[in-house]
Length: 185
Image (cartoon, rainbow, N blue to C red; front, top):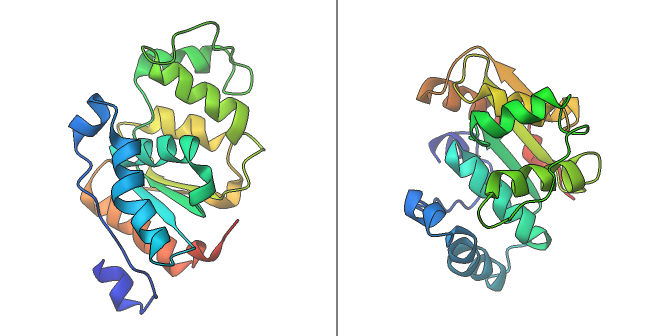
């Protein structure tokens, strides 16, 4: 928030406390929609971006999957995008575009559902700009790197650093300084 104020960028920001229980109980999308997005829309906001850090990146993408009509852009900062087992399966298959998710239960196998959506709807098809930034040494770089294979190169920011506050802050500063938020659907 301070970096936005320093730059005099005309953003209004809401930072919901979307802790792990919202993900575990699968109420994140409903809560975010009813408690944040719909009230913003009813107040006249029309250019709504989701900025998701770490697990919030996953949450931003899950919301975008379910309610894209409300979102004008997404910036994923050091996102957590799944566990090694599914990521290794996708890598072994030759990448997101070549991977076949097979038959699965979307409730029990959320990662498979998530990556199938990325394969089917994000790869070359989404009209909503998705940006991603992460550090080369991020502990979740495997999933982040897979996502870069389906995003336009000009929407990817990779810097030195890990999954830490310093790297996250630098990625946020780069996004703001480059004016990437001016991209809209």
